[in-house]
Length: 322
Ligand SMILES: NC(=O)c1ccc[n+]([C@@H]2O[C@H](COP(=O)([O-])OP(=O)(O)OC[C@H]3O[C@@H](n4cnc5c(N)ncnc54)[C@H](OP(=O)(O)O)[C@@H]3O)[C@@H](O)[C@H]2O)c1
Image 1: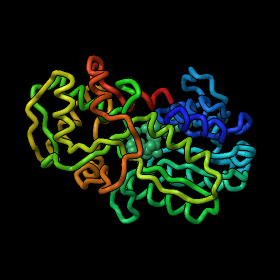
Image 2: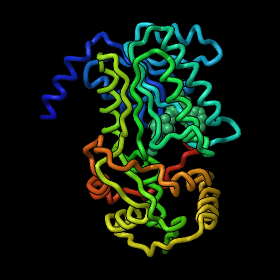
Image 3: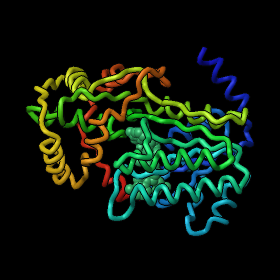
Image 4: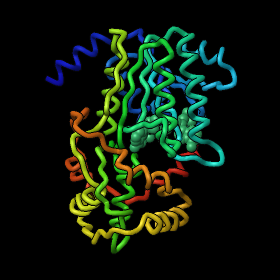
C-alpha cells in the first residue's frame, strides 16, 4: 500500500520540478527536503543562515527580506514553496511579530514569482484573539494566505518528535528531566493534552500537499496517532526509559521557576511562561480529528529508549550556530 502511494507521488513529482523550502538547515525543513529528493524532485533551500552546517549539500539561496524583488526572483520557476520559517519564542533578536512580517514578504514574493502552491506550517489552535503571540501570529499568517490568491495548504502540527532523540526539543528534554531529577512537577493538573507527530510523517504530509495540482486550499490538523495528557506523557517516558518518577502537580509559577533554573544551568530557555500557558489552555490538542501520521510516539520512544533524554537538547545552542 505504502509502495503504491510512493509510486503515485513519484509520478506526480517531475525530476525538473523545483520545490523551495525554508528552514532547510533547521529541523523539519531538512526532512521535507529529503522527502522531495526521495521522490526525485529538486530542492532550493531558502535560508537566513547560509553559514550553518549543510551536510546534505542543499542548493541554498539567502532570504533577502529587504529586497523583495530578488526574493521573488529566487523563487521564480519553483513549483511550490514549503515554509517552516518561525521562531519558538520571542527574544531580543527575533520575535513572533518579526517572523509574521517577514513571512508576509515571503508569501508575496512567492505570488509574484508565480509559485503554484504554498505549503505553510502553522500550529494547532491558531487564534487571532489569543494573548499568546505564537498562536496569534500563526492565525495572522493563515489569514494572509486566505487573501493572497495562491492555492495553499496549511499544516497544523501540535508537537514534533524524532527522527533521532535530541533532534526534537520538548520530548527529549522531558526524558532528560526524568533521568536527572528524583521527582517531576507538572504545571497545574497536567490534564491538558498533546498529539505529537513524527517529523517524517509531517515531512511526507508537506510534500504530499506541495504536489497537489487541484488548485484547492487545504487545512490539515497535522496531529499524530496518539494523544497524551502532559502527565501521561511523563509517565510513558518514565516507563520506557526506566526512570519512573513521582509526577506532582505544582503551580505554573513553580514549574516556570524550575524550568528557568534548569535553563540557566544549560544557558538555554527551557520553557517559557507563554509555552506553559499554551499547554494549559489545551492548545496542543484538537478534538475529534483523524491522525495525520502513522508513527506512534510510544513505539518510537521504546525503540530509542537507551538514548532518549541522555543529552539535553539546547534551543539557544542551535541558534548560536545560525
Ligand atoms: N518543532 C515543533 O515541535 C513544532 C510544533 C508545532 C508547530 N511547529 C511549527 O513547525 C514549523 C517548523 O518547526 P521546526 O521546529 O522545524 O523549526 P526550526 O527548525 O526551529 O526553525 C525553522 C527555521 O526558522 C528560522 N528560525 C528559527 N528560530 C530562529 C531564531 N531564533 N532566529 C532566527 N531564525 C530562526 C531558521 O531559519 P534559518 O535556518 O534560515 O536561519 C530555522 O531553520 C514552525 O513553523 C513551527 O511553528 C513546530
